[in-house]
Length: 265
Image: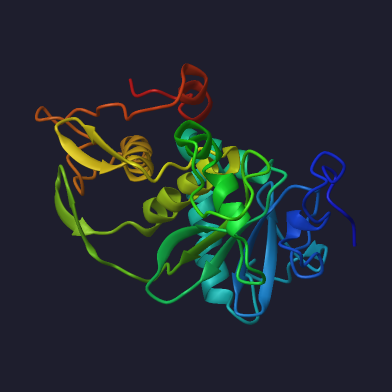
């Protein structure tokens, strides 16, 4: 069991913050990892591999993960593999894998949402940290009475890979691609990692929307293009009347180049 390598930098928070104050459950293979959880079982992801209790996860003769929650773990593993085959997906997976924060992809029936913080402890300060830029620009905290003591935080992606809801795209109505749904939530996590989640409303491309959702839909459409799928039409803020992507509101040129290094051709 180790303490956070950034503990001396952030003296106002616990040295086990990297593991949601639970360094036994949320192990960190290289000090930087994504975890995937089903019930009380948790695997760590690092560089294309899954680990359990510090060792490579047990697999059957066909190379499939076995044991409790194996179907969920296999689904997420396949989706991460697909993401890693694209520029946009591999960029986000790489950013989260290389973060000092922990991001837990956790099974919850019917769910697809990102929450800053973890179930194991109350973490309103992490919500403020995940939206640190908004907190600074608006001079008001997302949750009052708690500190915003650093830029960025970890969090939980609640996810059900088995949901197949109808989705409107530029090629027609199709069943939702859960790999893209997972990417959408991982993108929220990538913003939280940098303290850039923004829950404010904004008029953009002739429609109003929440900034974090406008950005995530735009990013998901970049991924959809790289997977040769039609653009997502859930909101009109992402594409114009001609069916072309419209870049979302971004804090700075640095931010755009950091999270969108692979512009559409």
